[in-house]
Length: 401
Image 1 (cartoon, rainbow, N blue to C red):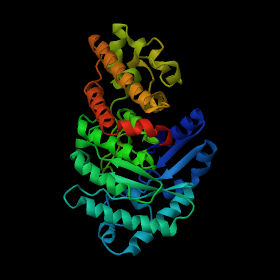
Image 2: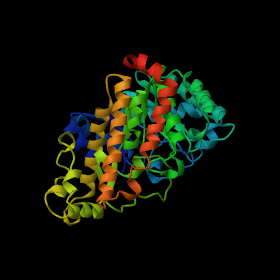
Image 3: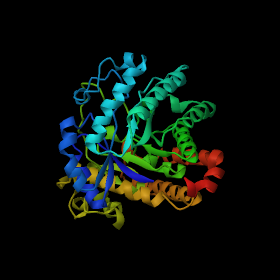
């Protein structure tokens, strides 16, 4: 599994800096956060830094009125109505999106998808939409790989496995090269504490990989490192929480809310505010929270230079770069040559996280809302269910995924 960057507000320089550090990366562009003109003018800088791009049309909510989206000529307030109409609209939509893909120099074409609310008729509406958009793509998009967006609404991944298997059967029929999965997380939670949601996501990803198609997971965070056990090709994450988990951020009044700066302690898979790093400093355990050599690129040096963390000039950009780089290394650490080794690497990582969280708590250092403590068992349960349902197949077909 590779780490992609999910582009968000103010991420241009961070993407360029990290790409230079890593000798290349892939960024999933966001029309909400980059104008058509910037798409054109930033391409040179991206190319120079080794940044490859994908263009996510962000079609999820057809009635969205975010100013960033409205700058694109394919965006239309009557999307929803037209989508239910004839094929002409789908063809116009794909042609317009293709223009922006060409400007950005994308080799793969992300086919858009609306995020319909889940109900009894969901699968039929979803199938009809996908078929129209795939057909339009095949008609106009030449020489690019087809990546179909799978936009899963909040309640879909909370359904029983029988329903999930029905959806998998439909997905396997689509003649595309791969899938870009975007899944609305229950109650907008950053870290999902519902085992069934994660288990069903793993089942879908594994089934797609076993069918021979590519899988890219959008809007991810460190909880989704477990997708490595399903053979997923790429997981995208970013800076602010609105690119680390999916919810509707496409309305006019949606704004970035800057609050606390968080430090990601990778061994604990948890993030800590500066105030609790001060506690760690006073308790004499702060140096234990320092990243290992492979994760230490100097982004957090200020925190471990001997001063009280809250009194340093450690800032948001440093925190973001540190988080993203650590997750990239963790992706590499859990992605192994065999299925069994990949699962084992995930289990070791989870066990270590629990031990480090508990040790820090004994010293009065708490991660609060971003603690992984209650998530460890969620991930374990999802991995165990994956192994029970598709483990045998994954074990024997791993090298062909």
